[in-house]
Length: 101
Image (cartoon, rainbow, N blue to C red):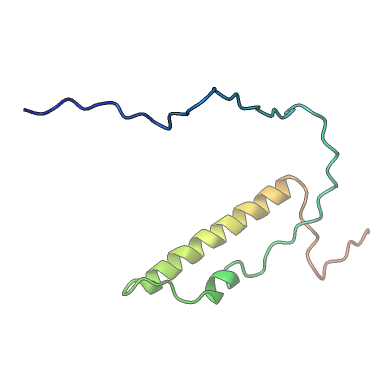
């Protein structure tokens, strides 16, 4: 017949119990004002970094994986550009001068 298991002591301390001093953070303290964000320029080729890493290490599926990874990166870049445009943070495109007529 199986013997009942005994509870094992977990890190039983010898000697007097010591209280740990907890440090608290003041979450509602005032913070310094952040600087104005710089204008955001969308990447002309968002997949350049991805291509620089080489082919994905998926034997027999590298081309398909590369296509899907590039699609995800392009979609993320597009969403980031849209978000920047919605916050009026896009830099004017290069070559376009603001001409007041």
